[in-house]
Image (tube, rainbow, N blue to C red; front, side, top):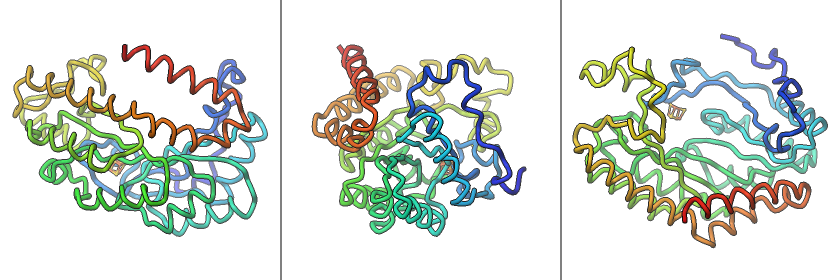
Length: 305
Ligand code: SF4
């Protein structure tokens, strides 16, 4: 474990093969911290980093942003930290510095929906944050408890309201196929998605990562082994079936329904417009980003047909 993350050099993006063939935005992936203090049973963060969070200093993060902006012209950054807002004091300072230095960048971050406040999101937005990503995973209180998510459905409603009221563009990750899930639980997730109305949703099929608490539970039930052919499993694989409470055919049918609802939700024209608006200044500074996003949108439409 490296205690002081400021000692690390920045990723050598220039060593990527044909590094100027990437979109400027691709070079903007960063991490401001390592680790997450929470203990969701399906997550491998604690296996990787332990639950002790280590943070880079605000100066160190800002310097990397300057460096990447100078080298690649990047104006859209993306923080891939497990939970970006666990240290409110640090994030507040980071946002204030971005505003003070008139950095003219946009950035997105992943966090927990119960770690948001109206004041914090407003400040982050003012500092260029144009996208917040949160893990909802399930709309069932029972599944949230079983997975030690540490967030209630009520807290999700509150967080969603904060995000909506601030006008922040936000997306939510949902998951289906958790081991104790029933048909009703999956339907509860679909209902919660419709109720809290994220601007964009992603649906994943549960995958038991080796070493996680849930993997150990499944191992005791003889549902997984260390020797399984893991190349067959992914968040979109038809082989992923670890929900004994739902017959396999029914599970596949529910997945189809959920995926269809997610697609319908994401295709909403008002949400697509909000997405484009959140990236407005990036498009003005880098028209190639607009062309890239339009291409992605057209290919998504084509796949739907
Ligand atoms: S909050 Fe996110 S990163 Fe932290 S343990 Fe849960 S799933 Fe993992």
